Length: 205
Image (cartoon, rainbow, N blue to C red; front, side):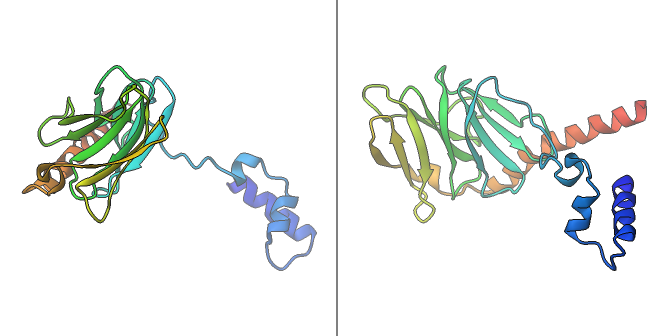
């Protein structure tokens, strides 16, 4: 940055300019990487296949969900490259995902096998609470979305060109006591672990 600043200042002096303008900055011919830095501040542990769906949690600003053709759904915190949770509802690739607007611990993923899997992390982090057969011929579920105004309703769109609306049980659409606190603990656990590891590495250096 200091070198770039010096080059721009020299360019401004040569042009006898009273102020630095974008034109003068470009005239200094700075390296492109200094002008247009990478927007990625942290790279997350990759899936082993293409990622087709990503969704941020509406209940925690740091938590997001991703699904991939490697058949896994992964929960991440923005603050850690390692996933908070990795789960595989089946061996089929996953194409879509959505968070419940009513419950922090509930999300749904759609698969290439025509199944919709609904997770409830309060009850199990390893397997879906509910699996719905969306298509009769096994066509993939390419999109899934909760209704923000009526959380018990969830829509699917599949490879047959059909959109369906499903109604979930009250248990999956009503906030449980202390659920937000439990979800916050899940989100913070990996972050604290990553911070501890980083601290140890700094001490070793």
